[in-house]
Image 1: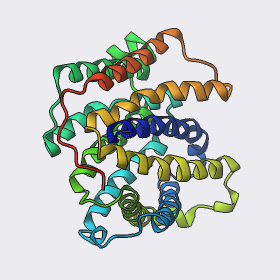
Image 2: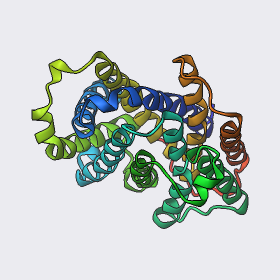
Image 3: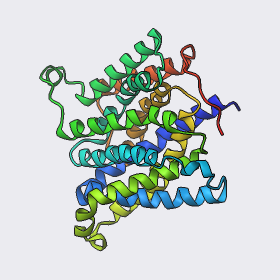
Image 4: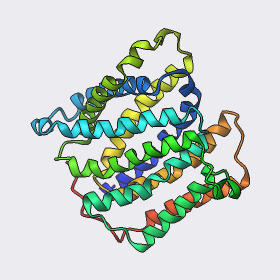
Length: 302
């Protein structure tokens, strides 16, 4: 299997794991401060990834160079996670996941500014179709709400988090200096843990951790192991083999995964009109995966 093929497989798994964060996050968000939960999430994920790095690649000397890179990347992803859980206090899982699908467009723009990755007309059309489908879902197929631009508070908060997520993707390739993905991820998690903990320290101290309901601990375990440690490594690996816009294209699958999860949890299905918007995001994904013409030079995996 080629590096590109493994990159695609990594992002397919990534999209499925991310989807679980939305369904569980909606249940846990009202019970705990978003920043406090994110800080604990970073440290648990860092412990897992750090152990994996120690048992596999080790920590090469070059990984210690320019530690500011890890603070920058960790802080960027910390913003995403905090705003995600803050938004999920009021946003529905499906609509929040639709907001997440706007990241490929933003990532494509950031990829041009940071890496000069060129987007072909075909890729631009696919991104436009995906964004249209996402907006259709966000406004719940309500043309009147769209005309008045009535977007929910939670969705609006999460959108700014998604900007941070989209910028993070090309930053990984720009700042990576040949470190193995698992080591680079570990450094980013440490940087994020330090910054978010410093920011959230008052909330961390004020939280009665022993009194939190079980769903918070279930969510924390899931997002730390699968949606943090797992997805970070997958994302780091994929960004070294695929263009930024194509990496983030897999986020278009997230609403479909969320719909399956929500149905499994007994929350029913969206209306057929809303499902039409989801179908557009899937179409955008298929178009992006077939577009292999415009690729920026991709460094080989170390």
